[in-house]
Image (cartoon, rainbow, N blue to C red):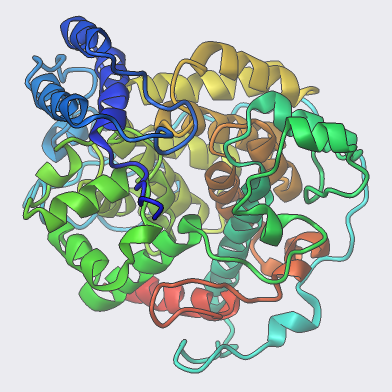
Amino acid sequence: MTAVRLTWAQPEDLVGHELRQAAEDGRDPAAALRTWLAAGGHPAPDRAGASLTPAPRELRALATRLLDALAQLPPPSEADEPHSWPAIRATWPTTTHGDRPTGLPNPAARPPTGPGQGATTPRPAPPRAAEAVPGAPPPGTEPEPGYGPARAAQPPGGAGPHPLLPTGPEAALRERLEAAWVGRAVGCLLGKPVEKLPLEGIRALARAAGNWPLNDWFSERGVPPRVLAAHPWNRRSAPTSLAENIDGMPEDDDLNYPLLGLLLLQRHGKGFTTADVARLWLDELPAGRTFTAERIAYRNLLLGLEPPVTATHHNPFREWIGALIRADVHGWTNPGDPAAAAAQAYRDAALTHTGNGVYAALFVAAATATAATGRSDVHTALRTGLAFVPPRSRLAEAVRFGIRAARAEPEDFDLVVDRLHARYGHYHWVHAVPNTALIAAALTHADGDFTRSVCRAVSGGWDTDSNGATAGALAGLLTGSPDALPHRWTAPLKNRLATTVPGFDGIGFDTLAHLTAQEAARS
């Protein structure tokens, strides 16, 4: 009988990740590390979610004790990386007279409920004038845009009404939201077959197929067997995500979480609490569809713990990318109000993440809310998102570095990626800091072009499907319409999304846009 080896949950693996996290956030794990290694403990798995074999009972018990001991280490000063909502808000720059940022006319954000309940939400100062990104989009031809006939497909029964077609601002917002949903799916699907692969593997596979710099779906056609043997595709994703076998958008957590966010808003409105997020997950999210910090938080809920302890108890993944991939829906439903988007993203993220994991969600939510107006370019959106991140945090430094690197190398994104990996390669490949820096660099370098945005985000490695999804959502939103997205990207999706989130399996992106626009209109 084969034993079940649950990933992202074994104490003997968690302790290695926690030792690494402690060193990254300024605590001293040296004594715990010596104890662990002396007892025969191993470092955390580099890319897999679990080590190959279970630890002996004594070693597993030691790992649990060390997790408790590491949690008691004196935390670093929160001056640079605050955790509470009031402390995070206090880092936001404000204008002298309390003016709202330029181009963001919506009223003040709803005060958060749950963590930070009752606090007001000041606004950052307006970003500085846009700096032009050197270079123009490279020459090339795009096939005609749009879904083609598949876009008119009716949604499945129970998935909601087929969108109506009124004119005016509401229709324009819905068009932008549909482009964002589709863009998120495209970027995610592009990154799926190379998720977990090292950078050299991604480059080798694409080059062997004549697809480098990356400009199209990954394909196995023409790739020599020796290259495939050296750099095997992601075994779970390749059967549904290579060019030769895409048939609709397969299930992925990068789409499941926006669906859950939409469901959260439908049930609880924009005043939801972190406890509402927790209850929704227990009701509607299969535990086996969670990973890293989300799996740990889910386990903590089942142990009877409550937020925000769910984000910290034996959770070495609390600064990884999971909260970022849940942030889009909060920006989509607060167009022009990045402060409200950030407040919602915080309450969502607090279930599972702290520190830089939360800041990444604030960055994406605020940038997305800015882009959702239809009046912003990508650089304004990124600067606005960054204004909601504590400025001396590691995440803010990484985003600034990514943007500067992209501007410094306008002709060759590979050089940008090499600089990012040299500076942040010591982080785990799912950590929020390197991945958010890469997203910002890719979007900056692409200068609003959809294809270049998703391809640069994925070609940079690390968490390829999540990075592609976030870059694709923002770039899609900025195009203004799904018909502006190249046909070669949208046609294989067939306006169909697979998911285990109840009530959404087989739904079309047009219907999702309609439902999201409804939540955006709710006060």
